[in-house]
Length: 194
View 1 (cartoon, rainbow, N blue to C red):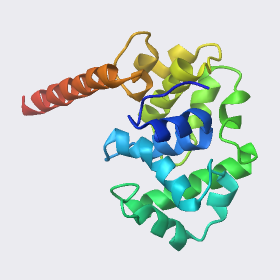
View 2: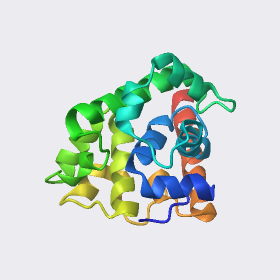
View 3: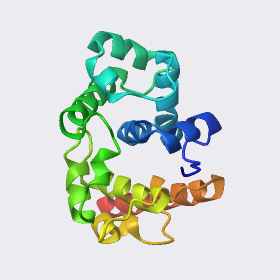
View 4: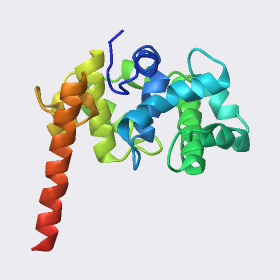
C-alpha cells in the first residue's frame, strides 16, 4: 500500500492509499475544486456513511437524493455537490456492471497502457487529460505499470515531472505542481491575448 500525500491530510491520504474506489472518486472530484479538498472528500463520504472503505455497490444503489444530501454536507464534498453526487453514482454503477464493483479490476486485467487508458476514458467524468493523469498516478504511486503505460499517459507519465496529482509526494512536490499549473495558465492567457 503506497503512502500518499495528495490530500495533505493523514486520514484522507490513508484511505486513498488503501481503497481504490476512494482514489477513483477523489480523481473524479478533482475538477473546478481545490485538489486537496477533492481528494479529502472520499474520507468525508466514508465518515458520513459510517464505513471504513467505500463500496461501489452501496453507492450505486443509494437513493440519489440521499447521496446528494451526503455530498452537500456541510462541508460540501464538492463545489457542485448535486452533479458530482450523480457522477459518482454513475461511476459506481459502471464499476458494478463491468468490474464486479471493484475499482481495482479496472486496471488489474489491462494488457497494456493503451488498453488501461481506454478503460479509464470510459468512466463518467474522465476525459482524455484526467484519464492520462490517473494512469500516471497509478503507475508512479501504485506500481500499476502495464507495458507502455508511460507512453499512454503522455507527458504526465514522464519520470521526474511535476505536472499533476500523479507527481505529488509531499508539500514540496505539491508546490512544484502548483507552480507548473500557474505557468501553464499564464502561458495560455498570454497566447490568447496575442
